Length: 259
Image (tube, rainbow, N blue to C red; front, side, top):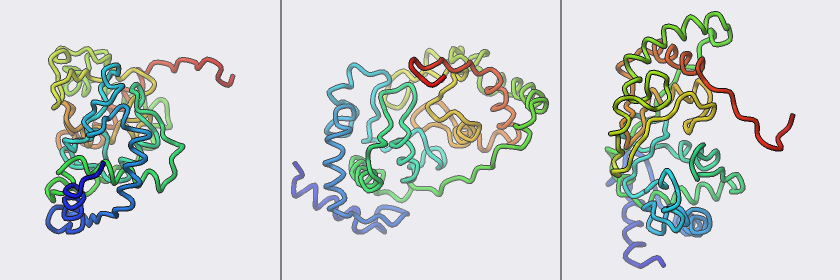
């Protein structure tokens, strides 16, 4: 049930964006109510009525569903610490997150996705603070040498050395997520934050070189995964990606899939 006080609060926060946000955000109350309806039928069982990640299914899920109340989102095109763009949220809703209970909500219309994004934003005050916003980063396209196996091998060799110096402490020398620091890592929610096994054919951020580059540039909010935007050159990051792709395990055949 939406109380009058909550409605008034939301109208003030979203109708007067200059008070709270760097981006023009105005609350469309009908869209908000539609988003509430969609959230309660698709998201509440995991993310909870309050958006705190404590839904009915939460105790059985690993990793725990995301809490929206802190306004911290891992997968973005914006700088470390900043809120995601609406397109970032759409990507997660549409494509899901491999290895988690977050599925692909392809059955939702574009309008329904927009509505639920509006509702999700109501859970955290960060959406109403100007300092929480930042323009998305611009990412370079994957170099042409990715199409030449001999060149990829050369860059992967260079990337292996960079990986050892910048990533192995958490992700392990074998990129299996078992680095020396891994066992002690926690996220801002106080939960264990095991580094990804980067050898896997499917990663939560996406499987392509561009997906890996995006994470190296933005980092993952709320975790120990920092941004390498200012500490590694673009070429060095592409070399690390070449190394990661060179040690990727083959995809497991899907039972009943096409031959």
